[in-house]
Image 1: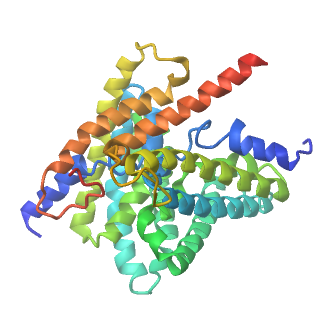
Image 2: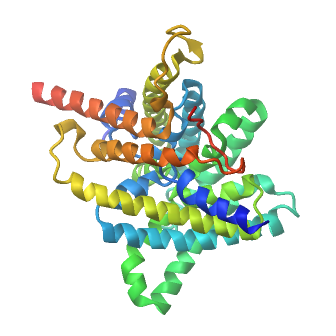
Length: 203
Length: 205
């Protein structure tokens, strides 16, 4: 396997292979927690920590986990880290725990974590797996932030809870509703596709 | 618990709190298998079966094992292990007992383990402090709502194949927009007052 630098991982996680906008994984959590930007940051950090830890441990254990039970083993490793993160959030950030609610334990079944374990961590050295987890997590957080920025700014007239347009701004309530989440995510994905296609045709 | 309360629970689980369109659980398999009506129905049946049995299993494990030993914080790990082994068990049982049914549902069964709707329903049962009967009913009707959403959306998607959207909207983005429009229809059910028993994250006023 050829050596890859940090920039390769950064480019892969943020743009070329972004877990949400390109691979279209973990859409449930993106749709659900993108109502506000502070939610997005909380969820993004929680998922990134889980991704880094599970990628590292699975990569360390890759020679010991038998082929047939690997998925079950991955799920147990992931759910262990998710529980740890959940308890930490509950203890130190009770407000985030309250607003994210059930979606923190649901990181266990977030397809991104399992997909990275299966597709990358189980085949690569620990250092590479750690970097992959870090930048995939950042890519996920960036996508979440992009969607929640649009939804919070236009749906509620605020950014991180701070009013931007002033009190008389007519709120686009649709964006704060579930329907708006689907449509907004669709537009962000389409925009990313449009610009990647444009970039490719230039070359 | 009265019959009226049970009926309200069922109604809200299917329509007002539809798992896909309101709670955003199970969106991945929803986008994956809703291409055709018959596969959507098969997947829905498999999920309904697993979710109902998983609700009963996780509810009893939580109340009879985790609570007495004060291990509630292990619920996520316990539930996912229960669900994974349950899916495996159901797969083996169906292969032996009902080969035709296994042939129809076979490929969807492993996918269900990582369907967030199944783990979600188990965690929601605990969060809402449902008893055994309520848990099983909630699991069953939430899964029916999931199947209903899958079925409706499969019909819409078959029509979408004939559309010619801009190139960047082809495929998943177009499906997401269609899902958003259906979600708008579903949000109409939230305006119905269910006697204050429901949990509505978004007010329409």
